[in-house]
Length: 266
Image (cartoon, rainbow, N blue to C red; front, side, top):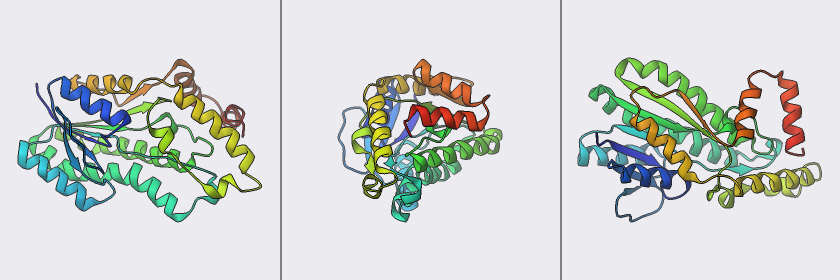
């Protein structure tokens, strides 16, 4: 059955791969991003998900054209690397505003329509960084932890309206995320953090650039869209990262933090 789908952050990376795969599968796909994009099969709308007004206008445009919204994929996100101690209010607002409040704004805009339809599907792109606190990516992890908790609560609240909520938790993938990461200048020159940050950042970038293709995540999202009874969580990663998520659930917290410190050379 053809679905009307909205994908945020659809100009690159996971969002682009998801939008194109769903369009190829025959769905009516609207990609939201901050710049103008033309595409033969995906209809792009300019929208900054941090703005509730811009989000509402974009969703209303889709409703005017299609009369319904069946699926929302919240993918828009960005990363800021640096020490938590040195993060500026502007960096924190940008990180949380894009990754978490962007997701909230989109959900609040589509839910009234999904409730009136008596059906809908929300897919929130989280991260394995949303189940473990990654050093020097602390506010990125905080934003994804927030998405995780929000999604769990939302799933309970809207299940009775015929709306499902799923989380996709990718590991490291080769996307434009690495190149677009903003790094804290204060951290890079700080006497206490600079060397540790540079070591950790080098490993992070190596893992990301050597990661899988974003089409793997797109395949999982397509499966969720097709599924009659999608799961709450889908971890999409290599075996090592999948095991780290599993181990986190059983190890004492202090031990797991020790593993993170050792792995990230902190």
